[in-house]
Image (cartoon, rainbow over all chains, first blue to last red):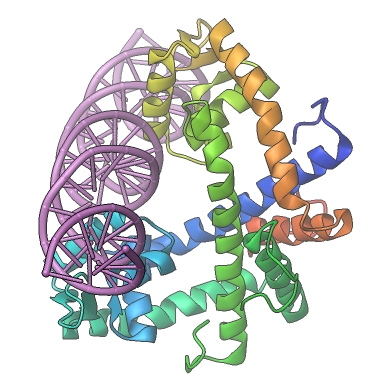
Length: 158
Length: 158
DNA sequence: TCGAGTTAGTTTGATATCAAACTATCTCGA
DNA sequence: TCGAGATAGTTTGATATCAAACTAACTCGA
């Protein structure tokens, strides 16, 4: 991309690869957005519902970690989901700092009806690659995601 | 990731690969953010300055396309850059619908001083992969980014 | 048991983001 | 030349996002 950038060849390769990585993620997400918007959800809200659906009730802090967002942001997103009656919140008794978030019947119904379409859309997007290519992409992405400083290139974490 | 998800094996592979793609992009971007924030910039503003630096003055609509954002958003981001005296805007005379955005001396100085550090940080992040692996990742990402319906898997567009 | 430090969550203020409605300008054909 | 349609940019209203300051609740050691 920076074709006449005076940095070294390796820097140019890294910049190009990085841009392609970000663009790929953004492009696919953008193509999935209409399906999510059709259910009157945003990506964050969909992510929360999906996590609760697949993993069961969770503490707000665990949700934030899973969605890769800040706690302040999580407060807002969950408040909006609660306002629409899709999730419910309850202080934990053991440790009253925690709030347990769980799906309401409406939330459960919504994600149960929405997720299969989403999964099908993801499949459609990823099928431009063969299964083997997808596994290669996944493996490379995992290593990049873990980043420098991750000990032991294999087995570090799923 | 959805380990007990009842969808098919191929759907599970696609979902897993997609998540890894998005996480990799988000993780690396998050690790680059401190460097951008140190220059009192956001990702969008940095992207605009970088584009103007490497490509010269551009129309606002071309910037929006390059940064992958909406025109409405571009208005805001550029207004904020203008407020800080980093870019300047000028109506094009040939076609008065267009606005030509260009760097001021201050903007030029800022990006000239900031970009090398950014490039070095990207290199550090991507160096968890060998050059060959980076090229493989880039190639796969490009195909995913182009998406289904892109004619001719090779040479379609860089 | 008391207090320093930690952790979960909220609030605040600034920016970003989107979709959709809108204005201004241009093009092209009848 | 005039008017319909296209294009560039702005505005609006809602949501999201972040960092940082804050409150409430817990832990652990002296």
